[in-house]
Amino acid sequence: NKEVREEVFDRLDFFCELRDAFDEARQAMQATRTAKSSGPSLEEARRLCRSLYESCACLTIHGEFKEELLKSKKTLQAMQVLIRADDLAEDTQLAFLYTTIVYNMCRSREDKIRPKKNEFPFNELGDDDLAAVEEFYEKMPAESRP
Image (cartoon, rainbow, N blue to C red):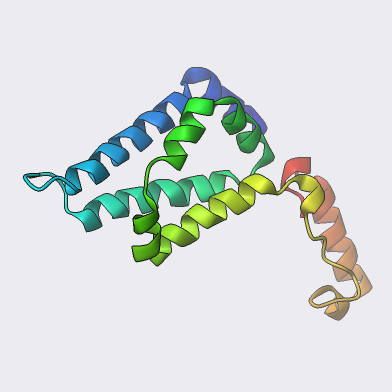
């Protein structure tokens, strides 16, 4: 709910914390590339990167998050420099998550694909069911509506 999100963002600097997490992950990635490293393995470091990117892929679906992320240039840069091209080439999951973030960042509310009433699954609903779905959509917060 919007009030809870605002309270969370008021109580902590989420983007500063996110940037710190990206910096830690970047350091882990760099440690795996040094010959004398006793740090994490490359797979462990990439798993950390995948987890961070997966979280951001989910968050970048939301317009409010994207707006704030674009204002937080250092966090956005930390997200971009976390991995190298060879990481994307070698780890398809990491590449997918990175691409998803970029895709989500490029989309806006105007780009939403609205389901049509004469297409599946809505064309299989009766009038009462369709009215119930529309009523449900009206009750949803504007930023969550399909």
